[in-house]
Image (cartoon, rainbow over all chains, first blue to last red; front, side, top):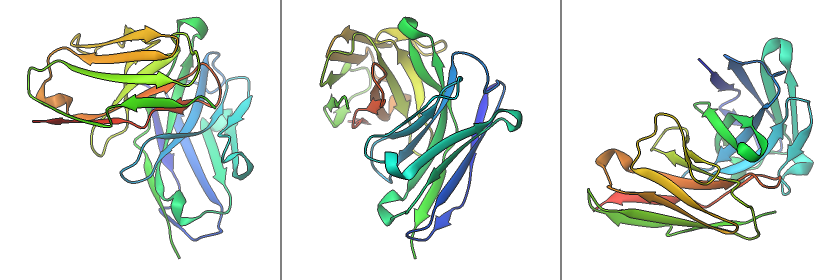
Length: 123
Length: 107
């Protein structure tokens, strides 16, 4: 069974750096055709894609947040880590990690998703 | 970035109704589009991949169609358990982008 689980602080202060960890099971982060994304959702709002790390360690970031984000993985620990610097109250959101299956023209899709972790930014 | 525009943003329908949601991409994305269902307090769940392919285990009342810039998601006969917010998502180009969501309610 494939699962992903997010962990990290529930509360961060403005200007601090957020570090979130996604621990995966049921697949290896070195598997071809499998990557992991981070996606967030402010309360009552839409999903926003943040960052992705491919099986070959290539990385991609949201255009608007690129300067603040870093994604990395530790294959031996089955973990994907996202850091976001200079946190602001508008960054308050539920943060999800999700596996992407990459089959090219056949399709790429997010499945499954973690349960999400709510991060509140407040002093 | 590719912009994804969903309509309507909210929809109220009766049990048994046929429900249709549209998603328009700001440029041609071929069939590189997925649909997700998100129930309150839960993570999104994949329903349709590559525009028209039903994910395993998803009821056949759900379907998707379209290519290029215009896509449609349909529930053929609305059931009470379909109350959720639905999102489209393109994967033709990075960064991946989602639509703003369509909140479906029972009338």
